[in-house]
Length: 282
Image (cartoon, rainbow, N blue to C red):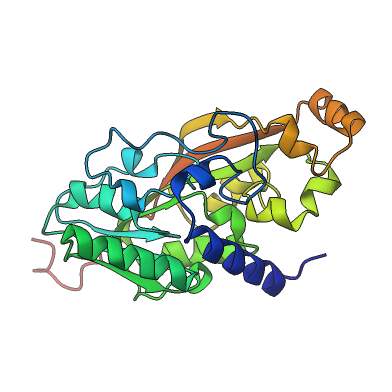
């Protein structure tokens, strides 16, 4: 069984390889994991190409939703993207914040940071920066972000509770997040859970949908809303790398659900201080 450190190192190595691949290669796999399918459709990602601010060079086809589309970003906002990859969601968010906003992309992988910085320089983007760091210990100060987004990343992190604690710390009071992620309804077969390659492909690290929502609530967030919920269908030629034909049929009969969800939640606004004298409540 993988320890948390082993899993992190696996993810770092895998996404270092993905940073050097093109979008077409990544789109033919489950979140770029390399478990290529002969099916012609993309397994996870939604279509970004019609969104304002889209940059093809920054789109590696690794997402499982469009969190920036639902994130209620305003002009001048400070926006942080957790697991920013080549910068795709950062550049989409910048179209909403404008020049007065500030954008910070956080990624675990040096190769991704380098690619994102190259993309930012090529686009002349001066109000976005990319920092290498672990999203269990987000490298920014507390109460700084108006909005946090993330796209198909938290499922890769063993300590999801730690990430939500960090998101709470980093958001300003009254700030919010919109996160697209992979969750489950029902239990995956053990062979898939234990497959390291599938873990890097965004499925085996997923947890139950209700547990995911409960974790958000337990960390103090309010107004939790599922903004989008869609089924993820993994083709048989991917499943056959991990399961026998009989096991695939049994898996389908269980109706186990692999879902892509986009979840919104808010950090409560700061309470007003109690009055300290006769004049302070005027």
